[in-house]
Image 1: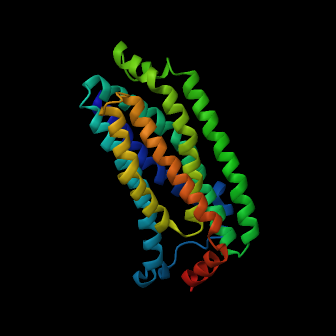
Image 2: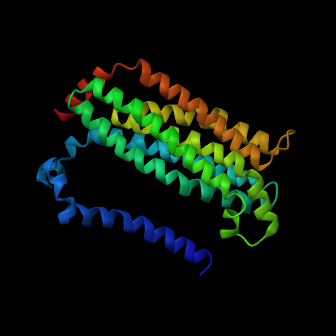
Length: 269
């Protein structure tokens, strides 16, 4: 099916995920979750109560949208090199996104866990859990990066039969592998901040750093006098990710987590 098959597969996946989650909730396997969720009620339809949740969800979505748009911009810039460079960048992005789904899925779990602990007022426990999760995410990112680097010659062949495209992708796999460690840690910081209910801060940081530093530097390294081409794209984006991680870690370090507890109580009413 070619390109149509890729689009169809993506659409089916996006529709399958909420369907499976709903089936899990109503199935015997998901009944344990009913201990902390009493099911649907008419009060959930009261629009007047949606304000706090909408603010949190919009900020959380802005983080993912800002990161996605940054990748799209640099992907477009690779077309100025050649169509083969664009094809190789598409291969690298696909490999990176597949790997990213592992720490991102984990980040959803830790945001829920941290949120529960904050809601219960267990600040010390939440801090210890966050420290442990940070180590786990760094380990997961390292393993992902090691696997990608070990298979750097084989992975491009799943996506292209053009030897030149495969060679370009293989040449850039080291930068992509290192990027996985940084990206996994970003999933940790963003997940923890979501659990603290401070998504708006993460959104501001991601948007500011990506579009004032990461994307411009990536394009300059790619197309500028350094001539790093695709390596420049990933070095630039990775450098921005390091800055984001550092800012978010400092924010979590100096944030008064007890204030997050009070904010959660206010949202609960």
